[in-house]
Image (tube, rainbow, N blue to C red):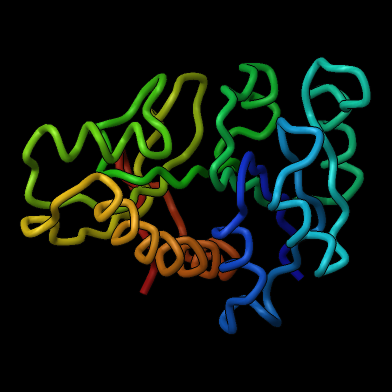
Length: 202
């Protein structure tokens, strides 16, 4: 079975979408959940599914990224999924798992990405730009925020919204669809690199 680790910082709705996805049920196993917090609501979700949880960082009671690397190797993790993880992944960690870390971002990259562009901050920026579409992007994680190659995107019409919160609600629905779908394709061996682009086999 294809093994993944999920990195989270907050409520864990994307983690829950992965754990409850019918298409992933007999294909993917979530073996570990990591957070930059000592505790977050996503840990409660993981524990309901008997998934081990770890706090990662430099604080007391946390494991370091170096320790996490060893643990992920021991667990034979095939893919690391950042699902609302707010900290920048250290460069040496990225190097150790090159092209094996993906992130879901609540906007259409390369617009509205980078440092500080997370959560409602993203949706406020989109709303204030008067953009008529938004959506979710999944990309390969590299050494900087939101600059890795884009794997998948899904758009939503936001031409009629009246607040950033309305955008957030529309985009979150898309996130819950696109993340399990992308993981399913990766786990099935459909992702490949074609020159400078990432594609999926039919």
